[in-house]
Length: 453
Image (cartoon, rainbow, N blue to C red; front, side, top):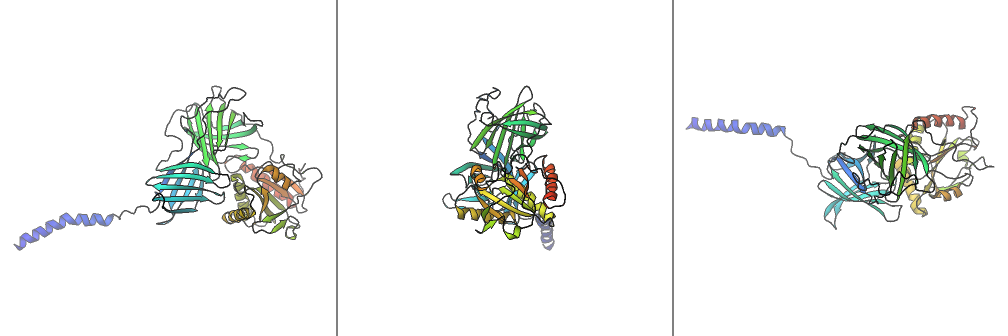
């Protein structure tokens, strides 16, 4: 009897013990507590009309449709990254660029009895609000400074493609530099440069204009059509193009739901835009700037203040809502952090999309804090360029946000650089070189003559 019990115990041990050993190697499943981690595909549904207006040369016909892939949808990718067991941030992905966003709140919608998320872009004064259910988010992108500006937003977890999973053989390789004209059906068309980098169906690129660039674009080439998009919290850019039989390009450009225009391009590696130093200048009879504006704390600041006397100065005309201004501000911040002994004073003059003083100053304080700026940000007025020119009447015009004014130690304006070609463009290294040359001039470290008009 005893031997029989012993055999039963040994048999039970050999059956059960592997289960104990196996269970010791497996950690209990830890589900995410908020939103599914990993890649999400977001879509802004622009609900734009899919018919392009006719243009004078007849190349872009009224019924040229691009609904094959986009159907009025602007796609972008983002990644949910958990910083610990309960909190996370996201990174928006536009080609070679990743934009981290940390201002995220997560809660429960009482009205819908569903989880909800709010993603704030405080520098740009916009946000996304959405309900979350399983692997789907659905809600709106809200732009605070535009009246009732809401764009439907939906995102799905696990989709790592931007426009399409199609792999149609491209009609041609778009890589290289293209001379472009935008606004073909408008009264004042304007020049641009397209820079494309293509690898099979995958397309990267940007467009440079005389007032700035369209930042990091990413998309696809499918047969004789191509698509590019970017979303950074402030702007939503969608480009659709068609490769013509003569190897030229035609297309449509959408900025959110409020702007649409046509464009065309031809390959031209030698095409150049007007020099950014030739577009804005002091009116005859002026050599200096003069202004008195409120800073973010509500104090009056003038260029004649004693703290600026005898110092070289950079005056940045900008807006907190402007991505190119953001790129230029990041450049200035990084440059002077790495070159702390230049002795150059920086002042930013913001032209904002609000007129209410309290609201504007709150936005300037938030911008200055989020950007970590150690220089004053002043309120110049409303963002309308004609009003901005009235606030700075010594300038021939305010053509672009940003515009960077180089002032020497004697308060003379030496250079005015219009627009900003940022890190998404091939012009960025050249900008850095000329920027340093101009600093040497205004700080007196060279006797280089002034090129001012």
